[in-house]
Image (cartoon, rainbow, N blue to C red; front, side, top):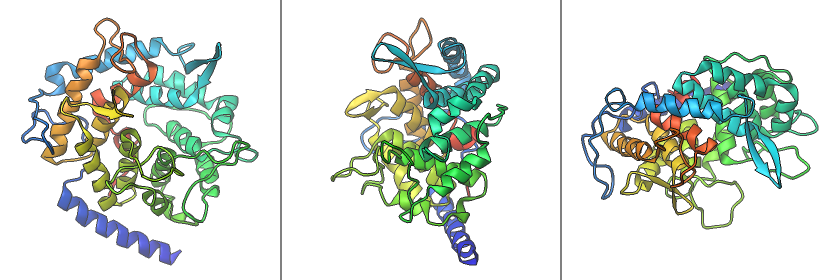
Length: 357
């Protein structure tokens, strides 16, 4: 244990020095910069975007949240259609709950939290912890239970018990692996949420292996992170994954790796201010990048976030105030939930009150 504490102390001191050098904040601010002061990296031009209060962004987020709440099944959870049947989607329900919290609709967020706390819903999503255990889902579910502003009474495992189950699934190479009849389907995004959970609970350094090194080890040369762990070369980075991982690395005190991930996000922005997923402009990717970049104090990151915010505003549908999955005409639950985070500038670290060095 003393060796772990020594390692942590060295990591924290190094992180603090690096944070001061590169301008990383603690994600305590909310919004992207009101007015950019310099051009972002590359050929992207800065957009003179007014503050959220001036441009009505808060009102836009509230309107999107109203649509989101109205389109949750029974006002409590997300669903999707498959083979003619409707299936519950707990992961998207968590995204919706966080969006509602960010927009200030705590009543609707509470209904989502209550649904997530129901015993069978929790087991279906995260496993029972014994016969089946899905750490990627467990970490996200535990963070949902711990979200400030939302009170839940878990009907199965508490947030602390879920953290125990996550820690028990840590393999020697530093990956949280599933117990599942379908094999291991854990992801870098899921591992990032696991790390954020353990940081929040002060338990990261009690692990039997280095989960942070296990996550950093799958990163691409350009600082990005892939969607899946076991992918064939070449390593292909994903904006959504990188945006979440960057925040987890920041929370874990890994300033150098976090800086590279954030730098990738800035570089990956297109001239339109949007970010892409699989070669196509994406509301989700743009929103998650804008949300993550609120952790940075640099003018370059603020410029990129301001451009992204304007792109999100342009995407919002005029009638419903929802957001389409792409350049469509119908609102999409996932796109709208993620877009609200972008509009409010709420990072996961800020929204979930996760400390960063």
